[in-house]
Image (tube, rainbow over all chains, first blue to last red):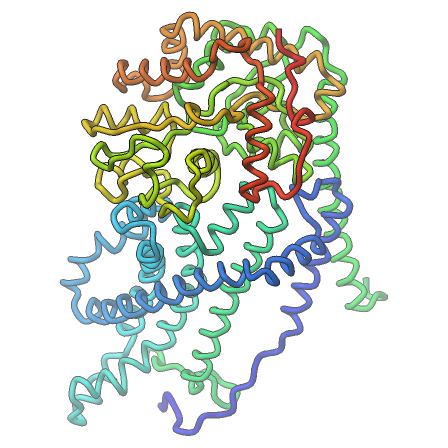
Length: 272
Length: 344
């Protein structure tokens, strides 16, 4: 059983036909609804109106300015979520006692809706970027922690025994066994966290902010500029999709050994 | 259908789905048109159920509405009113789309909505004075609007009545946003002032100052209305309702007018009615709640104009302020946005 190879096959992007067709169909549906439903523009603006509004916002620098602020919050929050979630997930995977000790806090941190706790974070940490980043961390670290924990625990015991019998040290077990074994699950959590990080940043901006896409959407809503609301929402979608694609790319590069010669290679061969 | 190619089958399925969605949307538009037309086939004796967007959470300040419901004024006018505590901006959209006949909204919302093409019109003033106020910690040294220079000021955000009211006050003192430091703190003005996060906040005369004083914090208050006359909250309807069903608009306005008058004459009746509509009000300090109500009453009616009368000067001031702030991009005729024709 060999889980990975030393030679990396060329990574090629998957076919985009179906995604493009789906997007095209969605746009057509949107246009049809705006055109034939009788709904006024302040309820459902047409794609053309949104495009025009978006272009105006782009030219004036408005859209880029607010997108940059949200992007900073998202990247900072996601990075901190990884730095906190992954190591903690590893530690809890190695110690069931610690897992039981932290379990109530970890579970309740996810059970409480972030929109309920966000105002408190803003009161405690102020209305600046810190509170937005913390909200993002709160929402992203759980999938990263849990997936890391499950990934590390999924390593078969016999592989541990094998490396120990070969005289491997603790860091070698971590470097050559546990990390590669946990990476697929970790990336699975990272994909979820990447899209959730956008939600976290925007929730904070909705409540108290001077900049950011959440603020822009709120402000546009208050001015009945529905087309600009759509621009903000679509930009958020693009941001989330972009992050997701970035994670998938990184996953494809780092986990090339998972899909070799058209077959999926797994660490755990299953019960004998 | 073996005689049809897979591509054609997929195309037909897609078109069918589109047709289903379009039909559903047309049905919705039809219902909206019917709502705009209002009661085309109802008997005069039947009640029209009206969902009324209030713009805020249940509160004793809505006492006139609660009294109008409790004493049957709305029912006598032909309405069964259901309170909907959704956002003010959503309420105006619903009115404009013909989904609901009336909503509660502030003057600046009506002007901004009209600029975006929402066909709404203000038909009765509930608050004749703008209720926004600047609240400062006693030791911040803010006694006049000019003292705001250089101060850090917390407000919910750079939008809404608080932002507009603060800007009006700054302009009155010859100041601009560049002369102060604005911080968006969300709806946490009490906490922000109490914890010293900011020395000055912007809120409502009927809310934050009263809360802070009862919590033991010494504050100074600068009511915007003492310096600038601006249009505030009232009843809004659609242009279609005004044109096609003026009798319904008049009936609704008169029903609310009676409730408003009753609470002004007997605030305790307003408190009692509110107990049945505001969950948890009975657990609140009655003294604080009555202070809120008495403060509100002083802002509902100035005594200088008839009750419910919308002052066109206040509307022009609001219009000019919004234009100056860039919240309106082109001038409007304010007399098209507001009318007193339905008052008793």
